[in-house]
Image 1 (tube, rainbow, N blue to C red):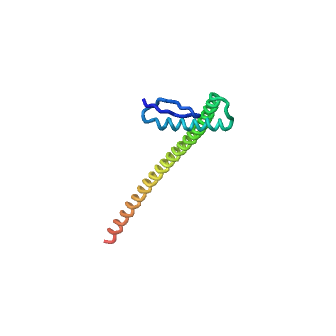
Image 2 (spheres, one colour):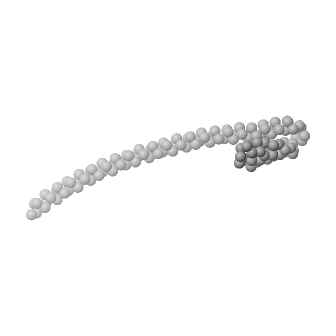
Image 3 (tube, one colour):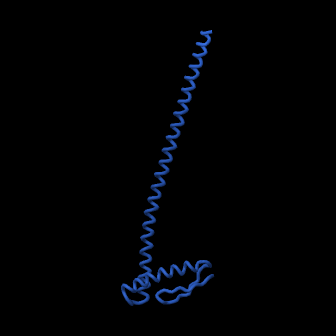
Length: 128
């Protein structure tokens, strides 16, 4: 297991993480440190624990908003998929109708061709 030292609010914390995740953990700590710094800038020195709790709540608020937006997008995606499936089904049905109509038209044309060929044969016999 890898170890990395991160700095939050000027204090170093040694943490364990999976091999290869050191950069990711450092980046997360840097982001959290920015929250803490922001709150310290707004409220001053109100205590490390209070600042840390406030920063954690800010992160959770953002996470809740992201989850809400993601849920809405999943709903939109489900609607789009449903619309797509309906459109594909409709197109498939229309395609079947076209194929059927073309089949009927082909049969009619073949029937007309047979009648014309029969009449031409009769006319040719009468001419000879």
